[in-house]
Length: 226
Image (cartoon, rainbow, N blue to C red; front, side, top):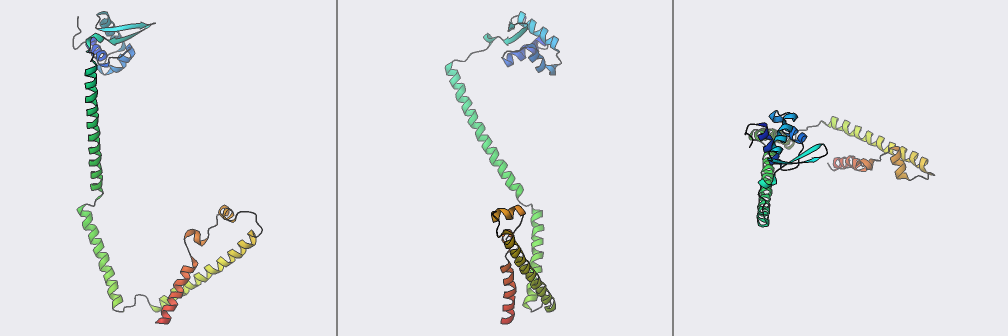
């Protein structure tokens, strides 16, 4: 007698047929927890279905393995299998095409999101216009011969700069004398020894004393030319 559609046997039979693979009672009970079926009820349903030959079973020691009856399923022939394979390939191509289209749309969305909004554009434009006005004002003063830096302030800055340059030059000379004395008879590789001590030359950090000295010399030449 076929199981009623709302009975435990019907739920278990539907699951076993849908899975169409070897199952034990624990597998079925775990999968059907959402129907509030206890393991005892599942086991009873499986036994009833097996006794009525609605499902197949085999015993392995104390354990029973249940399987959907295979005679209820239509087994495709080679031609049908080839057709199914071709259809599967076509579906896979459509999936890949859809994935590519989705990726392109997502990339376009990211590009649009990276653009400024109209509010941000107006704000940036206002800021740039303010900067332009400020620079034009300074340029106008320079064209009118307005002195932006007082001569006495400029002199103090130049003197302080020259003093720092002299200190820099002096310390470089002191370091060189000490370094030459320390490493004169040293068997170590100088580059590795320097790295070991954590020393850095001006050149290591992209600084050149001569380039700063030329600023002072260039300024003196301009004053003489004036």
